[in-house]
Length: 194
Image 1 (cartoon, rainbow, N blue to C red):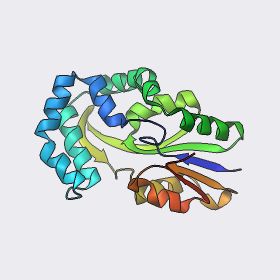
Image 2 (image 1 turned 90 degrees about the vertical axis):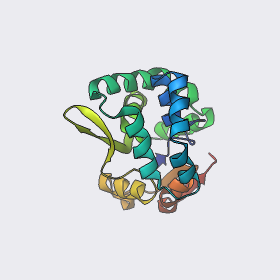
Image 3 (image 1 turned 180 degrees about the vertical axis):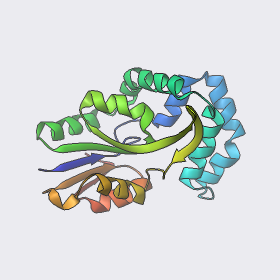
């Protein structure tokens, strides 16, 4: 059996799902106002002065701290059904379907929170490995539980789930520097192509 592993944002989608989720959850005014207030952090992230995980925690804390997990998850499930289909990359989904038809084990591995990816993955019959959000007393803290599923953490989490040597070929699809380690693990890496 072969293994096919897909990054989500920018690989299976044409847009970043975190930003699209924010627009789905809040009014555009609140999203843009929040991004303006957070611009020093976002600029720091672009300049590589603020690590990926820290920028994400600051953003999630700003928008979602103390939100009841039930409320958050209900909107995540709705976004899975209504928001995600609108940002999917057709050729990437065709490749995902191809692997499924070949009987390959298919996994999506993403730095995005699993909350809004899980329902969509379940509907597609695809396994999911993604960033987990911390909750306390039924409310989101804005912090990441464990590590952000990015870079080397993608490979570590994948190896927690399976033994790569058990697969004849490992296909990996990615589009950013956060996928480099995953692409190196693959016997058949695909960077920004299908």
